[in-house]
Amino acid sequence: MSRLDEARLALMLLTRLPAGQIKGDVPDIAAARWAFALTGLPVALIGWGALSGGAALGLAPLPCGFAALAAMALATGGLHHDGLADMADAAGGRDRAHRLEIMRDSRVGSFGVLALVMVCGLGASALSTMPRAGVALMLAAVISRLAMVLVLALLPPARAGGLGASAQGGGSAWLPGAALALLLALPLGWAGLIAIAAATAAATLVAWRARTTLGGQTGDVLGAVQICSETAAWLALNAAF
Image: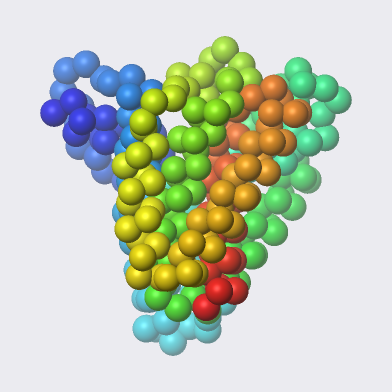
């Protein structure tokens, strides 16, 4: 039951999907990190349904791609997009303290809007002509959330409170996500490995930026890691196919 409650907690944290009730003590967020990557599966299936549904209704490929993005954003509550926007806005900060203050602000600035427009445009374009969309979406969803777990293990928290501090930890929490990612990559052949490499590169770039400008990771950084690595995987799969 403890593992089931940890999976429920991960689903509650990273999505807006129904997860049932946790009876008794709520697990630590850090203990639920192993299930972060698994939460990508239902989100990806929802996106695949929207993509396929749009095509069945006769929509052009690009509107189908945007429909898939919209469906996945609804499933997550826009959580990861919010993190990307906040981190992009923080790029205009004077120093570390000012950047962290900007990231606490609920308002979205021009940098954040531009980042969202570019990432959503690239993502929808990549999805609009994606062969084997079901497996491709699931692979990208899993490896992008696995990247969050790895960043939590490798970067210190940038501030004392928040998701980044409460979920931080090392150990073997990355193993279930890594095993699932490799399993999903098999049907895609070399394209799957290229997607994993692209997602890793994008997550590394975001993590490096967070380390140098913020001193570590926060919940917003994790959101930016997820959305950037997922989009990079989509683009890589699109190019590889």
